[in-house]
Length: 489
Image (cartoon, rainbow, N blue to C red; front, side, top):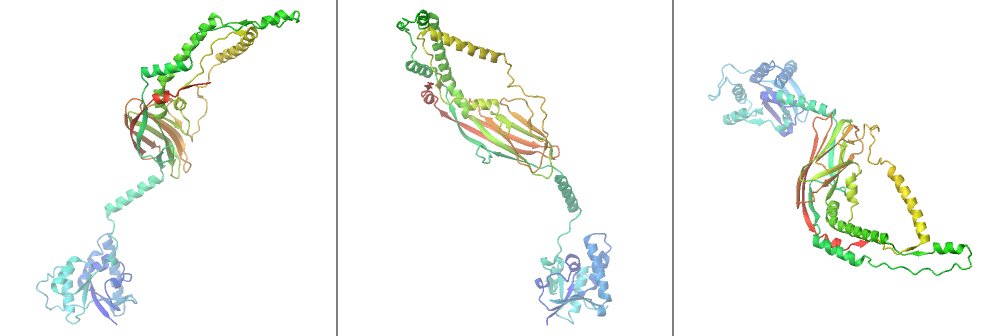
């Protein structure tokens, strides 16, 4: 059975875990270990036990109680651990007043006092060593030739938090408590395919306006395909078929009589044709801007979620663009009128049917046409007298405090838009907003930044999302599309 005698330095009692719990195998290999308490260590423990409420003072008081237990034990030896290895604690025998000490020792220092005690004890027990984790002691023992076992890191207590650490910990706990009482909002931005968007970049088509020469050439093509009628003939009178009908004969002859186009009808046709050509010219001239409006709008979806365990009060979602772009926004998929109109703009030139030249008519056809016109004109007149309420929003509808509403009553492209909700419930499906970024129709490059901010009354800091916008333009031919014009049948 191997036996080891170790004089324990003061730091072994103050800086290490309980000696019956430390992994002794990390430092020594022995079946039995005697820890010896030297006089300098005992004196230092006595001095430190009254040193306030620091961990060192508390450990000194605990160690002093351990020493008192050892002193009260049989043979003044206290068993700290029964096996693997067995560890006992005892006091060192008293030093003789007259003894030889190394001349290099400074016996006013506690480390040198312990070294002097060990060196004296080794004269009768050469296997005695020092157990210490103090660098100064390790260096002094090495230079004096005193064997020493360093305390391994696995024995040490974790560093104790000082007043600054405790203050920081208290502040962190306070912040955590405040945050637990806060709402927590999150923002995300996706495109139409539900893919995350970190930057808005790419190329959009830019259709060139048709030149005056191109428009004139297209009009000439329309006139060739649908020429204006210049000559108006008259059909031959209907054959007499009233013989034998008695008194009804003259009436039927009158109803079946044919009237050639008159001067007013011909003049009205020429006016209609000129108006039709004018409308065709306008459609060609507006094709480029129409195509650009349809293709230079970037659609995005903003998702706002409340991921906390409490509602968010007085939530505000703000959208701003900085640069040469504008935006439109709405809750959900409700497209503003301008967006709906843009989506309905023509992507090709479809002319209305050309006016029909007058060909004359029978008297009974005129009667039927006038009757229908009178009915149709009456219906149109009635509609004209009815007020239009389509653009009027109800100001009496009570708002739901859990829903988002647009703060600005403006559906035009702008640089700022915001939405407010009185109480945004937690753990519900994210609220989705649709944003249309409008790229300018003039200019080849759009450089801007989209700023999205979500805030609430019970949040200490807002949530911000910044998205750069970098769009260039790819020139497209408007004439190629215009040349494929067609007229409605």
